[in-house]
Image (cartoon, rainbow, N blue to C red; front, side):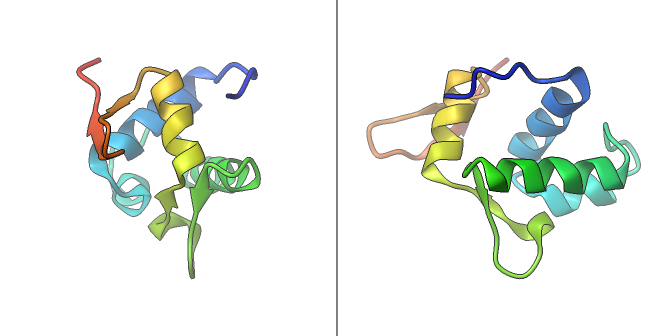
Length: 90
């Protein structure tokens, strides 16, 4: 879906958000793989691309269907026929 390769820190942050199911938890953790400002930048970037959606603040957002498809293309999740999201074993 996105031909642009991910930088290492973006991929690590993305993996952490997928596994925690919450960007807020990742951004608040002591072992966040990116500085907080970079994390917000990445969430905004994913929003501009249509992969992330949110209401009041980007840190409490969720992946759109396009975002889930993108994650599947990256090999970070698998989706079953009912489009339920499952974390990849990677």
